[in-house]
Length: 310
Ligand SMILES: N[C@@H](CCC(=O)N[C@@H](CS)C(=O)NCC(=O)O)C(=O)O
Image (cartoon, rainbow, N blue to C red; front, side, top):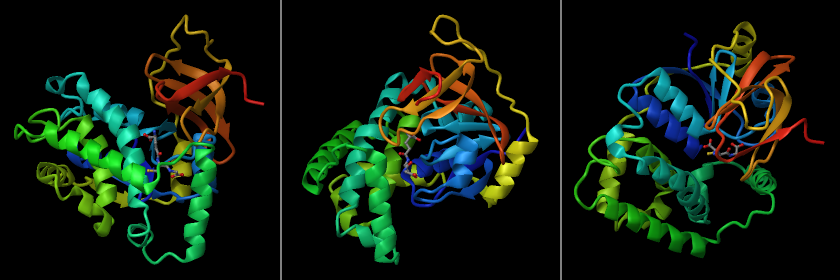
């Protein structure tokens, strides 16, 4: 089997979600550090234009979006289960809420003036300015929560989570960790990187104990890998994912399609449709440096369109 290659950067919350899952599964993986802002030439060589962080490479298969990456990791390493039966259907709903609603209060709240020096360290002002411009362009016209709004929403959400733990359970959906724990933990991890802002967590004692338990899973074992070597691995590999194109969804196998995130960073990826189901779409593309790759996306949060976008 090919190595698991995580393309990520240290300060990315969604990457932390996946790193903790790799720790939970006690997996060994290769670590490619990607740029925090555009341009990302080595990223788009593999993904075809998707710029978000992280993504997972397995040979010539490129998995975008942590929702899909988590399912792939759980399929490859089923023990301990990331989606335990006992955690029920609500684990998925809670994870989706955390990846969206909770995340978009935690990030603007942490990026208030008191938090910035902790997030950016000793970065010079032009780096912070470039980051702001990159993310403003990535978000398009989306309205970002003010610190006051984000704070109010965040405190409400934290109280919900504390209530969920009120019966003394070890994890959010019971005695075993599940996907919801990792999706929620990424936002708390981000807030805790900025200690003056992390005081918002103080009233929530059970939640603070819980996040320590999730962080204790660690990140598994990993070795650095150069982006150029990751490209070489893709070029040398043939895709191994077993794929079929479901009938009656309005798309033909082999047709040219584009896949675009519907929330933010709406960069289309174009290719030939090779896989389609209710929870995944896969397209094949050729890149001068990466060779033939198959790029996979979840269906939730993505739009498939016929042809290439003009
Ligand atoms: N739905 C995506 C969201 C990923 C996401 O928003 N990641 C942030 C970093 S934590 C990002 O891509 N920021 C812009 C970038 O890294 O270029 C997922 O689950 O993977």
